[in-house]
Amino acid sequence: MSSRGSTESSAELDEGVVDRPPLRSMLFVPGTRTDWLPKAWAAGADAAILDLEDAVPAAGRLAARAQVADAVAQAAAAPAGQAGRTALFVRVNPLDDWAGAEELRAVVRPGLAGVVLPKVRSAQDVRLADRLLGWCEQEQGLPRGGVALVPLLETARGLREAYDIARAASRIAYLGALTAPGGDVERAVGYRWSPAGTETVDLRSRVLLDARAAGVPCPVGGLWTRIGDLPGLRAFAEQNRSLGYEGMMAIHPSHVPVINEVFSPGPDELARCAELIAAVEAAQREGTGAVTFEGEMVDEAMARTARLVLARHGAEAGVARTSSASRP
Image 1 (spheres, one colour):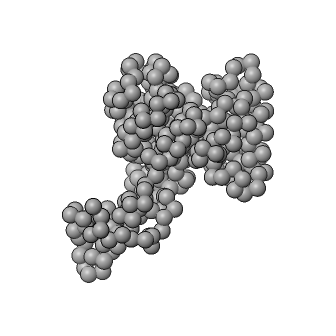
Image 2 (cartoon, helix red, strand yellow):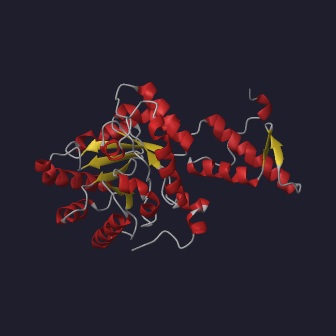
Image 3 (cartoon, helix red, strand yellow):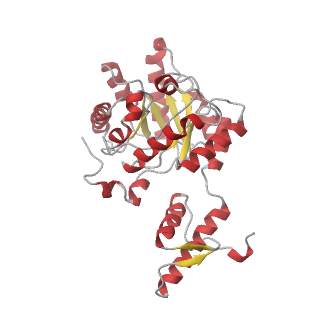
């Protein structure tokens, strides 16, 4: 079993959060409807999650498994750029028996970015999944640890043990708290969901802190189930972004553009990052550690944050810089 690092400091290094690409939007697609994948690409989803769990009746799981495995193989064989930048994940069923292991074996192949594991209760569940994934990777000739693992914290115990779960395997990524009306988490915790999300803010915040402390790259939250309520979705996404999440899972293509916009820095923010870096570096060249920038005192700590924003979103430090004096 792989581990995430032997010390707290190694888990909290800035570099640890960019081991895997940030994903703003992860869109669920029923495993029985792989023909809907082009809709995920057209919507601009950073990732599509082919769902073999809740979206598939038990009687149809074998057929859906074959369909999903074929979709992953087709994605691997597709010409570069054909599917845009959409990464493929598969949500499997809980690994409670050999059927779960066979499901993993069927879908882990070139073209798969990661596995979403539901109903995770403890670090032991993660260690089992990690070992099984390692065997599947070896069988397929894939790099060890290349397939990401996204544990879904849908039980009270799983939410309580988020930190231990997050540290149980180095392949864990995008772990966060998913809170929705009437689902597994509401049933497990007992809260009463509201669109404002006030009853789950503390829960989402605590899970996020656990994920960050464990060094999980790019935590992702969610879900918003009101398909036509895009203003409500935006408010909920902005709340998650303010807490520190870097993306959300989604259930409908119409949600993807809103989520992507909320979790993407705009041109003004990127330009400000570049200007702040330049101001701090100029002060450092003159032997000063801190400098006043747009009325605030900034130093190397703020510059490091700005560099990370630029690096994650494909911007270069030399982007066009607008004079701060010209900003309102």
